[in-house]
Length: 628
Image (cartoon, rainbow, N blue to C red):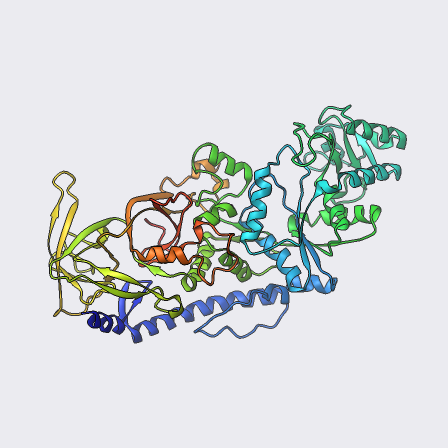
């Protein structure tokens, strides 16, 4: 019988998009048609990107094996032009996160650009924590940020902190006062707005009266701020720029130092400092102190470039170059820390790592590989335009990556037993991937009783239904023959189908559909199917706010799903060879990934224990598979 199994399976192949078993020639035709469609889409996107970069369009990739150069964004376009402006043998970049929350999807682009740009040009990247706001910073954020960067596959050349330079920056602030380029101001928020042209910017701008204080007065007041003589928000050090004539708000005497509102102890310096530099003061100076050659940031800092260069030229010798790229945004969700906290506090989600969120911590738990994220960013390329990407496009990119990198297993979400009356138990060798022999194979036990998904059986047949029904035949993947249902029983209380009895249909025609199944004795699992958390593409714009846009069906839990025993081999070997970014000692349960044939892509959840398997759906097999 084993020979018959092998012979039968060899003649057919699974069309993973439709769930049908078809001939090799038919599957080849379908794959070519789909590949041509994908190539047209890729060629169109490539053409748009090349036009933006003023480069001639290139020929589309071959239909059979479209490939993506991970270094393309450094060779052409915006980042290539940035390097031409300042070519260097010793490129130094930095990733400067604020340790006041968890990183989100947009930060993965910043990480990939800064670390990738330096790597491509043979340089190095510093991880510098912008720890200038002790009221919002926590140790857990410092730890999580570093772990996320390493999970993505990057290693900082060193880890630094803005607080390393507190004394040096304070001394430069006093230097500015002595140069008559800074003054202590006591204006409140309303008064400052008036100086800057009022709410609508329609009134003339003017400089506050404190700008006329002499150097000695400003030094005395600034030292008083340092020594705790002023309450929060009663005094702040302002740069003396060009508030009257310059049209750039970043030159309207912006803040250099302030007294934090809550006066929380600093994570690293404790209570030593009572005044802290602002981002606009600290960031550019730290870039200079650390020899950053290319300060790459998002376009929200375009206007800040003028104040960045003004301050550095005034105070330090080494001059970094700042350039801005378009940030990455995702439609259909929110990523603001305040909004995410609201979701957590209202118990809409379980925490910062809930798989329905788009923090990198949540994306990791959901099971999305770091290599898939980097591939997605490479596909988008880098320009000065802000990208607002549809969730469907993001998930399609992840799906393409998983399709070639993870093994296949059979999973049944809502199992119902099928007793095959004439079956004989035996083992069959099943490949982990029909397309990649290097993934190997595993044993699958053919038992007399198997379990199929309840949705694959109907009590009453119809012409447009091709799965199992009374008197009807359906194929079981890897089985030598299709099965025909001969009877079924129902639970007297619930009315649900309790058991199906069937026989092998050895003489009938080849079935139109093949379904997944698992043997008797297979392990059970809790499977969590996550859909979009919000109903609209712009939840923040919904009347009443995003809390009025929550999708009540964003999570469906199947508590008694079953999975074939090949899962244990997948778990033992995880992460699989092409899981870029995941290294020994730096992986978690989410590195155990596989395709549940005809269902979705799954990953092991951190709630799993030795006695319980918990799975998260990463993405569906098709774009429209969000329905549970």
